[in-house]
Image 1 (tube, rainbow, N blue to C red):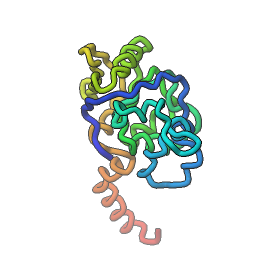
Image 2 (spheres, helix red, strand yellow; image 1 turned 180 degrees about the vertical axis):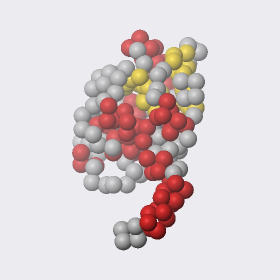
Image 3 (spheres, one colour; image 1 turned 30 degrees about the horizontal axis):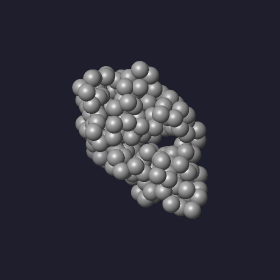
Image 4 (cartoon, rainbow, N blue to C red; image 1 turned 120 degrees about the vertical axis):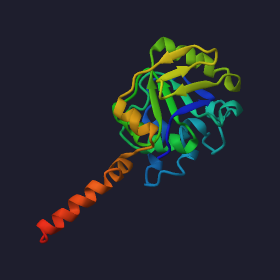
Amino acid sequence: MDKFTTLTGVAAPMPLVNIDTDMIIPKQFLKTIKRSGLGVNLFDEMRYNDDGSENPDFVLNKPAYREAQIIVAGDNFGCGSSREHAPWALLDFGIRCVISTSFADIFYNNCFKNGILPIALSAEQVAVLLEDAEKGQNARISVDLESQQVTAADGEVFSFEIDQFKKHCLMNGLDDIGLTLGKAKSIDAFEAQAAQSRPWV
């Protein structure tokens, strides 16, 4: 998993509330167990017309936001079913940070396991960042995980709270497998000892 320390980039404004995981990655794309390749289907039903052509009105299809790395969204982002494909699709598109007033718990935790930083701010702060994001490439938002701050395009700074263990994992690029591998010596020692004391196991 890639480390997350700082990020400065264009933010895509998505002021809708209750953006659920089926909107993020519709159910017909859940057959794969690979984490790559889902970015093309991110927000599929909003992003494409029935004939498969791009919907020019959808934010991520607009030239200013095609390489957005941040989404600023309405309340309750990531609600709905618990599919981990949702953060997979966001990450594969290039999204490393989602800012909202609140997140569904399972989606929130899945983000950290996949290298995405979900940031919860007040409605007033999100409104400022949404206004910034509407300016497209003329406004870049900065996120500093170490200092736990988001800096708007005009220099206004917002602090955010984060669980310190999740922060440590994200800053060091540690998913569940990475955390386990960090204990490899202890695991090997335990298995060696167990093999001697319980050879029948």
